[in-house]
Image (cartoon, rainbow, N blue to C red):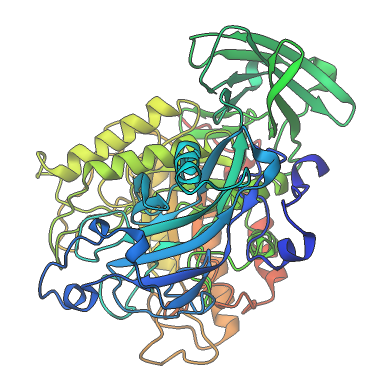
Length: 636
C-alpha cells in the first residue's frame, strides 16, 4: 500500500529535515502535500513557583499572566520529547507544574496568501499558545490533538514590525500540569517516584508540532464509515468556511485505478455526506489476514480550480454483535490481544521513532497476538496507521486514571474527561483497525452507591461513545464497576496465577454466570451480566526478569516462576482455558513489554524478547473453540 505509506516531503532542505526527531508526517490518514515540521531544538524553562507547588506549600502566581517576551529560558529541549525523558536533553523527573517553550518560526515564502494552521499532536496538560505576544489559543487535555489558525496573529505581528513577505515570528507555549488536580493522566505517577503500575510523568509537548497552509475554505477531518452490508463507504465531509460555488469530490481508488467517484455541492450545509458504492468485482474486505486498504482522494473545487486536496485511505470491514458473539466481516474471529502501554525507557510516552511503533506491532504479531488493548493512553495516529496496514486489531482506550481524590479516595471524573474522550473518538473514527472502545478502566465503587459522580460519568461516557460511533462495540468500564445495564460488552480482569484456580473461576460462562470482579470484601461493583459478548480483558501478568526477579524494584503478579519452562507452562495453561471456552470471544494478556519496575512483559523494556516468540505463537495459534464450526450455539 505505497500510496499511504509514502512520506511527504518536508519544506526546507533535505538534510535538515532528516535530522529532525520524528520527522515523518504526523497525520497519515489525511495528508496534504505541504507542511512544516516544528520538532527539534526549542528554548525551554520551568515555570515560576515550581518548587513551592511541588512541595504543596503555596499556590504559585499564574504563569500565564507573564508576557512571553519577558520569559527567561536558559536551556534547550528537543521537541517532541517531554522534559522528564532522557531523549529531551533535560531529563528532570520531578514535579513540573509549569513548563515554557519558545522558538522562532519562518513561514515559507510560497505560503503567502494561505491560512496557516498550527497543529499540536499532544501537550500535557493545560496549554496556552502565543504568536509573539498575541495569545492565539488554549487547550486542556494531555492526550489529544488541537489546531489553531494563527494567520491573523502572524499578519498583525508582521504589520507591526514591517517585516518582509516571508514573516518570522516567535512561537511560545506554556503547559501547566499540577499533579494535585483531577485530570486524565493515565499511568503517570502522582508520587515523586515510580511505584506499582505508575510510571514517570510526562509534562508539556510530547507529540509532533507542525504548520500547514490551507485556503480559507478547506477540509476539516472527514469521517469514513464502511458499510459491508451495502458494499459502500459513507463519507462525512467537514468543510471549513463552506460557500456557494464550491464542490467537493471524493474518489475511491485501488490498484486498478478509479473505483468510484462522487461530487457534492458545498453550501451552508456543514457536513455533507457522500456514498461510495463499491462494485462487486472491486470489493475487498479488510481483515487481519488481508488488510486491504483503498485509497481515498478528497478534492475541493471552485469550478475547475483546486482549492484543497487530501490523500486518505479506507478499509471495508464490519463489526457486529450477534447475541454473545462479535463478528468481523460476518465471522467469529477470536481476539488474541495483548496489553500495550506505549512507554519507552528513554522517551516515555513518545515513541523514539516511527520504526519503534512498527516494531511493537510486528513483535506482538510474531508472538501470536492479533491485536492490542492500547492501555491507559491515547496512542499517536501513526500507530493506528501501521495497525491499519498490518491488519492488527485495536481497542481504543482513554487514559482515564487520575480521577481519584487522594489515597483511597473516591473517583470523581470531571467534565474535562468527557470533552477529551470526545476529541479522541473524533480523531480516530475512520481507522479500520479499531474494533472497539473502552472509555474507562478499573473504576471501583460499590454498586449500592448509585448517585455518584463515577456512576454518572460512566453512563455519560458510554452514551457519548455510542452517539459518536454507533458502528463499534463499547465497554462501559473495563473490569470492576460495570454500570450500564445491557452494555455492548461485559468483561473481567483476573490475575490468578494458579491455572487450575483460574480455570475454575472462568468456567461459569457456559451457564451464563461468568466471572465478575468484586471488591476484596466481596461487595458487588457491577450491574449483573446480561448475556452480552464476554471476554477476559486482562490476565497473566506473569513476573519474569533475568536481572532482578527478586529485587525490591521489580514486580509482577503472584509468585515468579522458577524457570522459563515454568513461565511457558503457566502461560499455556492460562491461554488454553480461554481458547477452549466457546463463549469467550477473546482475551487480553498482560503485557507486551516491561515498563520500568513492572516486569511482566513478554519483551523487556528495550523490546528484547524474554522468550522464544515462536513458542508463544504456537501456544496461541491453534483454533479457539469460539471459531470452530462445531462450537455449541451461543444463545442471546
